[in-house]
Length: 613
Image (cartoon, rainbow, N blue to C red; front, side, top):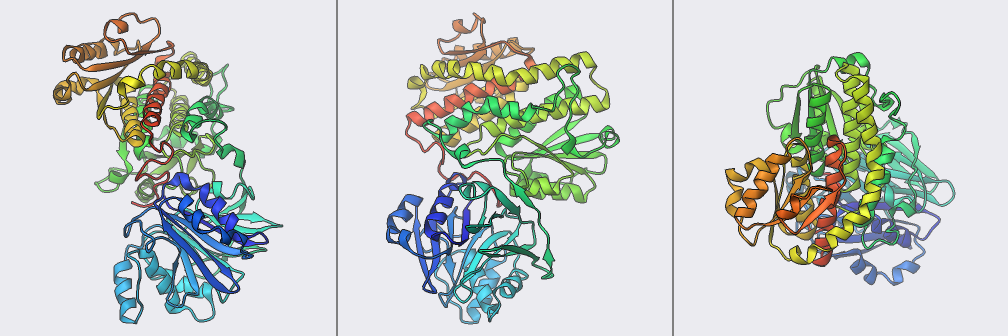
């Protein structure tokens, strides 16, 4: 959510800022702006809408000799997406400027106090309050003024600030909102809300932590504590991603590219962690001893959105193989009930970005209550990975499309790994079965790679009959019920078709009232332990003339007697069906959205990383 880019160094600042903002478009935004210094005067461009609108305003600015500036893409929280509300925001002198991600929760009382002192405001944002608050403390020391202002602030923030009286310095600070610094010895220093903005220029980064303030100059950065003013050490990390990994590589959209990257992403998640001959699982970054894992009496899986669906699948796996009771919570609800969490509970947080605000808040509460915390995450060095006791990285690579695809299937792979790992530690699965399950996980990536073109071809023949529907139902049972939820979420996210996922057995408890000859229903019917139950549900749909799409097992001749619209998948180990059956659900949603002309990679109102509650 929202994007920040800042730079000070030898290069012209405007091209650097705009390039960085383009690489953060995946986060979702509705307005944009850039500010820089030229001849010690502040120059600012802002507009509502996409970056293309901003670029059209800034033709001459590309030639500016300025070497310091900040830029922002805003996802509206306080105030509509208008030019006045767009970042950057300035103080009353026009010399101080700020960009901000997060929410200042006590902005209203601060604004009233500042108004009483003579400050006037031109926007509805909480951010403008913050820049005026800094101004109220500013005399000669920008760093001190920022520190003093932030001590009065309640809420979350990642900020970038500069002042025309200190024309060679950026100041950055963070609390509960991600911010990363980029380091390059020759061309200068960078700051951004996410790594992709930095990759064209450097792979050397420093992750700021909550309560950090960084002073950034062309020669490097120094990090201090906001609260004490003392210098703190933050280690430098080298990122393995490269800029080319964030390009479309010939695909129409990032989402399609990322769907086709799933075999490699799953293989990356599994690689080096399984001994196929013994079935032994090795995940040293979990950082929990065998005794600690053996002592676990219950597990809480905490996540949002797509990651929550991964958790629902993992509940089946963990309870079946490790024999530990599992509760699955939506993170935004987790901390608002009386949690029965103690030292015998393991809390597992699942997040692609590792910065999801609700999930972070949940694990912090779990830790306070005595729980050990493990996180499943894709981003090295993210806040969640630093605060957890241990991490299982998914190694999926950067995911640019807002609607998650390869992050989801990689999370499933990581969660299956954990289920086997825990089962091994608790001695609840014998070696023979562990080898069988490990082999199934190793094989799923190559299987998907082989089937992807076949699945895409099958789906291409379906979409003309379904792309203009207003509603859609997805149903499944057992391990595939969460995949029905995920399929419905993908369709509604990117095509704006109203879609709902249901447990197939729940049809008679309400949803069956919706079924008529206009209603499409996609059913997941692999040849598994609940196959006949799902077939019975499909028969009920057919009797009410519902428009049926089936995704089932190759060689199952019964499916074609129920509908002409069947997508066939290979028969594999039942435990791996959730990963395999996700693929056609993703591709169906993608092809329908593309056929409808939707903005697949940046669906309206959505953001990639939800860093506010």
